[in-house]
Length: 339
Image 1 (cartoon, one colour):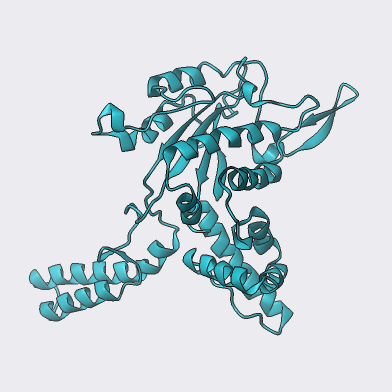
Image 2 (cartoon, rainbow, N blue to C red):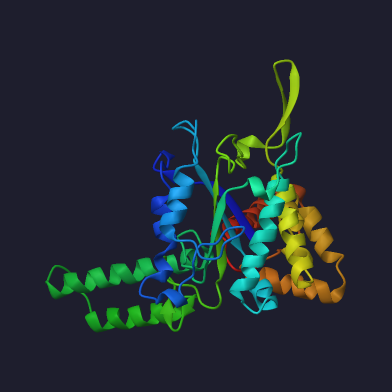
């Protein structure tokens, strides 16, 4: 399960309206009959129009400055294993979203607990994902694409008499490079923008910065971590427990659907991998044989590799730590279906 929480930006500033983002989320509905479309849903409703979402979010921004986000985007990306557990059913994802947002509300650090009734949100399920430029498959194909592009350019130059060369030989090299490229879908080299294979269902949640009464602000932003500040001589609780929210997101899914989560699928494991790869490897090595085998399989599918530990501690810090951290960071940024 990968979850990202981000404020929606337009260039260097924040979007004044949610309209563009809503339009983007409607892309999969293009050309489909209404009964086959995925509609926005909320805590209590199942079919909300795009126009209704824009009106509700855009009118709920009282006293927010231009330098403050008006809404946040939460993207929830279950793994292939998790999707298989719920048989890829959209209704199960809706049920999960509604339970998840209860935990989102509880994760705000306030003297008086925040409830989901106070959160204004709209969610939508999407079933497709595309590869982005920083993903492993695109990056590892890049050298092959670059060489192919040069060969095609050289062929044109040879045809115009600007360069000497054997066109047939260059065309054969292009065919060989396409064949040798490490990542393909249906024989086509994976490039940025190409649709990912398999079931890729995920959830987009639009959350208003203001509560449903349009009175007070609820920001899950990273600079608003759970903390206490002194205001008018009194300590005030503020911020958002991100770690709690991420951990609860897994617990809610596991409880709802009876899912047996492997060690490497947990938020705690991912955090340990980034912060302390030595401890991660030790915990991985101490797993029972069956769980360890599954863990390594899941890591492999995500495009990550757990290298052997060098004897030199400096080498470990420079090589293992950065290598694993980069791999996990790419995976988490991609929101890819993996572990």
